[in-house]
Length: 514
Image 1: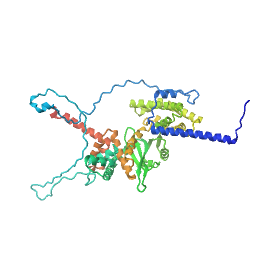
Image 2: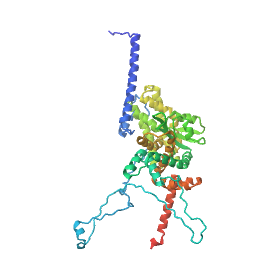
Image 3: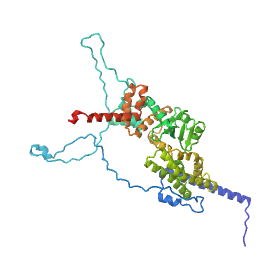
Image 4: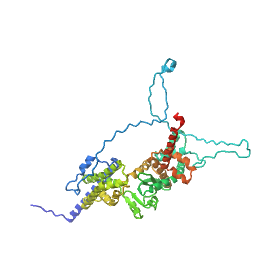
């Protein structure tokens, strides 16, 4: 005998309310877990390969019933053992210290040296300040008495009657924008360790002076980055002080990167799409690779001749965050994305050019992308995952960015993701942890100029101190037409040519041959 319980409208309403609250509670727990993992967990998105393949095997009842076909991968060749590099360069200056036994020191004439034992240590002497004194001697003619005395002209300087020389200016700039030492800490270091008091207000004016002189080089780098028709763009928040408010406000470093080339930064006080009009000139035609921020799409819709390329790293990151909620589905999707990155790793290993990259992607990556799209559409159509959930948000993001994610398959110049420009942002992120904020809004662009120069040196393996000291010495005596000779790329090429000529002269010297 079955008993049928009648549910009143009030009880049905309460049950619906309980179900809504249960789902809301589940979504909030997922967000809390994701936040805790982001703050306290590992930042790496790598997953154990065997575990990923175990999770990636789709069950017959799941919507992911497509075969898991891997692109053919050649067998890995045994990597040769790397040669052991010396612990320190052999060309370092050597300071020798001879230690004799006490009996020998007392009666050296009674002993004869028959050998020696040598041991080495790597030592360091701190940098030093010095006063560079320029002495210009005056001359008069011995026989002609009427001409005025002769004296050599004072070399051109960044600022007349300025106290700091090029070496000190280079040290201050490199310490702040490369080593991330704030000016107030530099003030303490110089005072306590070297007994030289340099007020940070004075160093701030000197940094501003250097940025003004390097502005033409910054424009040269910017023109080169935007000249190839393909750039990666991203932005990062930086706090700055605004007088009269007593607190910091948020500005942004907008970053443009040309893969295989330079990167430049631009400072803006907002994240609005209108900032891209200052970043990207009207004459630019080509491809912008970016994340899913809506400002980029608004900018591209208002310009002719600009295409947007998406970032697979952002898609992978969102599915990685949803892995705990739906390990089976997210594991399969992550495995497919991993196949795409395996193709890119093999192309980088073989240093493939744009044409070969496009051909390999069409043959191996495109089937994986098509399989992914079918699976995402099927999962979205089923409606099993709420849009507010981690997996639902990842599905919406991937499908919303899909036309931009497919663009890299047909263009071999494009990268699979935007990681290169995100790596270029890291120096600014490290810096702001030390100096916390920019002193004023106008100082933001000066910082962008100096970060651009420092990053260009870093990418080419140039010592930024040596570069800045040389450039700041030569700039006051150069014309605008000579500015392209001082970009980091041109400076490095010129340095190598000079070293090559000096080495050739040394080899051809008769004295050395004798």
